[in-house]
Amino acid sequence: MNYRIYRGGEQLSPENFNFNVKKIIFIFHGLFGRAKNWHSIALKLSKFVEGFLIVFDLRNHGENEPSTKISYSIMVDDVYEFIQRKNINKISIIGHSMGGKLGMLFTLLHPQSVKQLFVLDIAPTDYPREEFEIVDYLLKIDIKNCKSRNEVDYKLSNYINDKQLRLFLLQNLNFNNGKYTWSLDLKTIKMGMKDLRGFPLTLISNASQVETFCIFGGNSLYINEVYKDKFKTLFKNIHFFKIKDAGHWLHVEKPEELINLISKKLI
Image 1 (tube, helix red, strand yellow):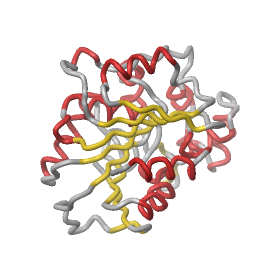
Image 2: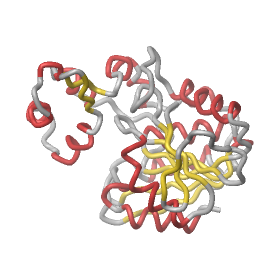
Image 3: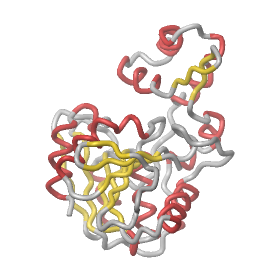
């Protein structure tokens, strides 16, 4: 997995980095995200917390080589293989949306490896399928024949009115040899959407005692009282924190509040 390392308000080179340190925090982005989306957050957060932040490109996202499969269980194996290869003992996890579900499943399956878990605006539950999903819209656009980023944005605007959401998605554009491509493996993500919308409860045998924080936007539809009850069933040491006037993208809408909250609770 491609990754970036941060400490003390700086991004560090991963070359020859010694992972045998006392405190490591993993950050997992959401669906259609990538490590570089978290650059400013990681820079600021690393000023206030001890240890090293490692921000990952998850499977079929960012600068990773494409794969023909994607699921939460496969991504858990990706993360576990990484910590085994790097001889990392314990980690804390911050995960948004899809990354939050990955963090939850990893914690439930490997509790001995997790010190704390921060889940951002997502619950351990199945979410309903939309009639049309973002991945469908991205697949509709013939970006190889687009001449500019603005042209891609214009075509995407036929399906998505939200300008901020389009700007977020356009961060996945690559331009090589005179042609645009997505850094996302859209076909694999499309095939895996049922798994990514859900949560694999059948893989879980025991509830987690790891200290867990669910931080959610006050305007978000991803957390409600029913979903909180599902949290309580699986995570016995769960705490809920609401960020007012924020939606699902709380790290974009209210970054200072999020950084302040995490830096106070992270041990």
